[in-house]
View 1 (cartoon, helix red, strand yellow):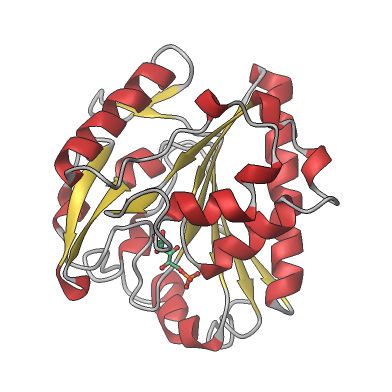
View 2 (cartoon, protein in one colour; view 1 turned 180 degrees about the horizontal axis):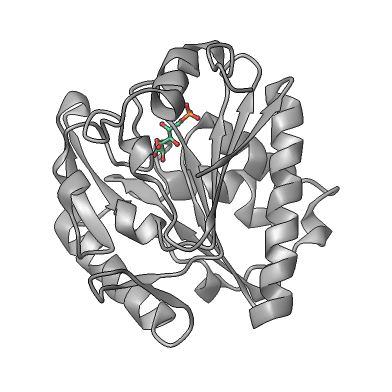
Amino acid sequence: MYRLEVHDTGQTLTRAAAEHVVRIAEGAVTRSGRFTIALAGGSTPKALYTLLGSPEYLPVIDWGRSHVFWGDERTVPPEHQDSNYHMAKLALLSFTSLPVDHIHRMRGEIDPQKAADEYEQKLRKFFVGRGQVEDDNDHLYPRFDLVLLGMGDDGHTASLFPNSAALGETERWVVANEVEKLKTWRITLTARAINAAAHVIFLVTGAQKAERLQEVLEGESKPEELPAQMIQPLHGDLLWLVDRAAAAKLTRK
Ligand code: 6PG
């Protein structure tokens, strides 16, 4: 199941998203003394990071007790314009009081398989004994307090692209994923890892997403073609934050 919030514009959606992040962060710090968040790439999430990095929101989140991770990364260096880390750093991270060792980036600049293995070990080291979820096959997964996701107009999320190998991964938390249509490799959390989170929030705006969003939320289940359908948190809540333009074809609003 999921919750759906339809907001008039991308701007009002971004503000609502910021309020949800603040609420979840406060709850996590109160409960466990820290807040773990996995960031997405893309223009919609970027608008949220910019607002969170503004003087209005910057003091509201206890960044000193937060740990920032990524849901996926491109195979480029950290200062490259396509880097999800670079985008988040410019929009948000450089304004926060985040200790350097609380910023856990995926190393897009090295061999993707090595980067995926390295990140998996980093996550296992961080989350072992500090928040994990066991699935029905006794596999352990990381329990992020919040995973932010965008959705592409092809129904991908993170770097889980339609008909890509990562969709079939049932044990690993992080994989290198070949994206044929983009002729590139990505590093991405697997759906199982994302589904272990306490909260997952999708951020979707724009008329160009309307048809796909209707298929993902209301159409038949075909996760190989619509990987966003794979996101069904095991013991967490799923919230779709969409603007009116992206929601235009939904029958349930
Ligand atoms: C990436 C993202 C990707 C993104 C969607 C939506 O690395 O590109 O993680 O999953 O979130 O493509 O991006 P937009 O919001 O820009 O449409």
